[in-house]
Image (cartoon, rainbow, N blue to C red; front, side, top):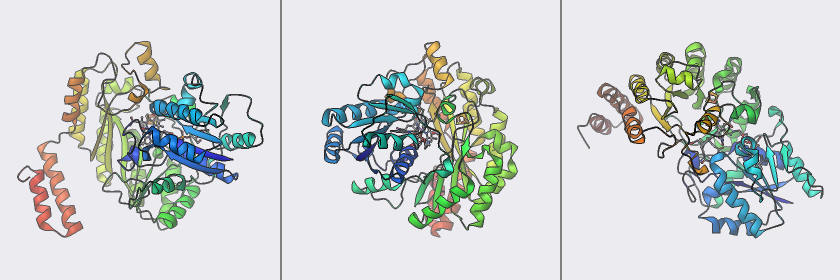
Length: 467
Ligand code: B12
Ligand code: SF4
């Protein structure tokens, strides 16, 4: 009984994109967990990662070569087109193969997923308990009676660690050799770099996101214990000698006792590798001592969803923060040497140009280390998506457009020429900030390479005196 999992994440960079940034260089923890759970029950599992292939002909050839009995496809809303095309090709090439789909989109829009006849089974919610049970039932000639199956919620600490080799072996087969298991993305996180996920769900209620997460993972946030994470990190240290890593959790810092215990264990076990995680401005301001502890343990950066510099817009999206809190959070991060990866959105429904300008001025004042702007994109499963549908505001015509990248028009009534200007302006540093950053970078050059000439040149470039 052979099982092949399919990762269809090519909506962003297309085929043959492996290694080109986060979207094309990170493993899917969903599939890695499914693989580990199925292997633990004795099933043979491999992977076809569309990002590693040259095109659909190559996919068909891979499917025929492997001839799996069961294929499991994961699917975010943005993956709908490649995931359905993959299912179509599988059924055409191997009509007897059972195709199972799961992931965020099948959970959030069961009806649309069920309308695709090539999906024999649709598993909603979490898959680690249910998928191996399905495989056993199929192997024993007793296929499940229902086409749509509600996945059982697992005990996270009881799960085997995610099977990274599923991805890494497959990538290696395609000649992808990097000095890192996953693609690093900032100077502060040197290779070998890895991603890890400590829990599921989020207790907050931002309208552009929820209730999607609560629908998929349940209302209560569940975390692996700090000891369980440390055990995985020890294994990863032995296997990959990682130099840095990043937590994928939606908001790692929401559970203060968990964070405290993790940091203490991390330091006690002798880990010094730097890491990034996601946090929120209000948490950072409220728990400065926790920020200090995290910095001491090795946290070098927070991804923070500042989203807007307008209090009216922040209320509208139920962010639970204010412009003042956003700015204060940035100050706290600076104080403890934590880099700021600023996520923010432009072109939200009801947002005026004056409010967009408030976001620009907030970013100028904040001077984040990394800018991560998005044109607001309505995502299925969120309240703001429903609002956009009810008010006929969505300009999205294909699932491929469910990307936050600021390249396409998304919302009726927004002036995208203005938003493109805002996008650039929001990232333009003031001369004072440019100079400050030039000095800091030059200092780093001197320290890192002991090369004062290079450092002086870098500084001259920063202030526009050299090319
Ligand atoms: C890490 C992450 C990323 C990473 C890595 C993604 C990856 N390769 O997994 C990066 C940064 C690349 C990323 C990018 C994007 N992401 Co993202 N991401 C996440 C995040 C925070 C964690 C994912 C994760 O590992 N979860 C934990 C695992 C265990 O859960 P899981 O993958 O859902 O899998 C479980 C079940 O769904 C199910 N399952 C999944 N697949 C299958 C298959 C079968 C056969 C079965 C039986 C079961 C099953 O079983 C799994 C185990 O229980 C989630 C939010 C979240 N907390 O999940 C958002 C999330 C998945 N991302 C989201 C979005 C919107 C995006 C982007 C479109 C954003 C953008 N840039 O525009 C891109 C799209 C990338 C692409 N495919 O082209 C949305 C998806 C919403 C939707 N309606 O689809 C989420 C839910 C966040 C949110 N609330 O908005 N993302
Ligand atoms: S946007 Fe972030 S903080 Fe808000 S509900 Fe979603 S995951 Fe939680």
